[in-house]
Image (cartoon, rainbow, N blue to C red; front, side, top):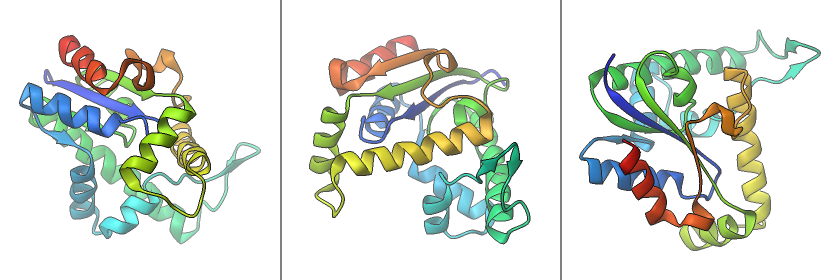
Length: 192
């Protein structure tokens, strides 16, 4: 595979999805985020809502053993992971693109000319952004951020054996709270 692919991992509320979409628009290449969920649903036969809700859940490890290995849910998650890998590999083979989330950075680590990006920001910036973008919820914005990030980290760490968000696992780590969305877009576009 010789295609140039950008993968964007991100903290919840940091603007990673928005950044990916805008970079894709400026480069004239597709961005797969929620459309990735649709493609995984088509391949797996699982409902899109199930994939959205379970796509960041990870089996639990305890004393080196994976709990619930034989449960229905765990088998579904493993099947979902395999389908996700296939879909991401297929998309990368088709041509240049941006893939947001879903451990694409790990899945494509040896298979594509891939720029791996991680977007983060401080709690205050992300809290303000999710309230403006998604509206108020019952939980505090900070709790929603911590919960979502915890799920993403557990999922990524389980399936990749790497620490989610650790800078050495990415080519570029950008703080959208400090740089702003526009500057992050421009940096990634220039690195492409």
